[in-house]
Length: 71
Image (cartoon, rainbow, N blue to C red; front, side, top):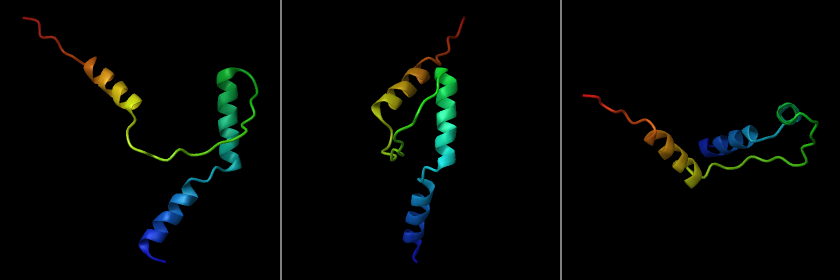
């Protein structure tokens, strides 16, 4: 097995949604909403780089960090 195949195998193993992870997600959502929920489908979203939403959020946060110099 070469290095690239090893990395792909590790990536596939890391993206498995286990029953324990589903239980944690269900409990978290139930605590937030205040009622029991059933997760019908869950999947990992592949990293596609920064989205325009996240980029605009970072711009907004950075622009709010302006300093005024009082003379």
